[in-house]
Length: 180
Image (cartoon, rainbow, N blue to C red; front, side):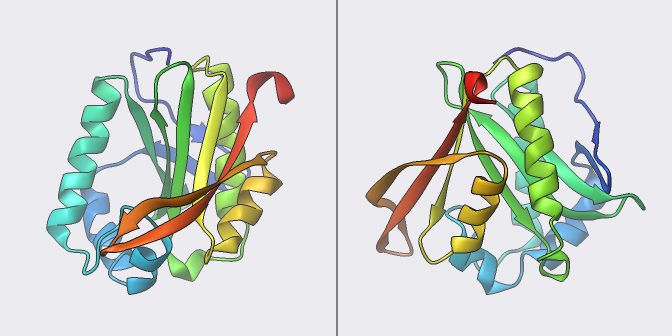
C-alpha cells in the first residue's frame, strides 16, 4: 500500500469522507449501541460503549500512521458523521474493505456511493491490485452493495468467522485493478 503523508479527504456528490475526529466519538457510540451492528458485522461488539469508540478512533489513527489502513468517517454535506468506511492492508497489494452506516441513513445509497469512491482511491492513490470484502450470509444487503460497486463473488468461506462462540460462513467478494 502506497504511503500518503496526509490523511485524504474525498468528496462525492452527497458525502465527504474524512479522517475520524474525537468529536465523532459520541455519535459513533450512539449509532453502534443497536445490537443489529453486532449481529451483522464481525468486529462490532455488543453492548458498544464510549470506550470502544475511543479505542477505535485511536487504532484508526495508528493504522494510518503505520500505513496499514485508512478508516474514513462518512459525513453528510453538513459535516455530520453518519457512518464509516475503510481499507485495511493485507499485504501483497491487497486490502479489505469494511463499512457501517447509522441506521437512520440506511437504504439511501450512501454506502454504495462511499464504497465506489474508496475503491477508486484504493486503486489510484494506494496502488492496490485487489480489494475484497466479506459479509455474513444473513446480511445480503451488504452483498448487494459489493455487487453495485463492481465486486464479484469469489468464494464462500465456510465457518470462516467465529463470533460469540458461533462459527459463521461468509461470502467473499473482490475487485481487481485491471477489471475496472
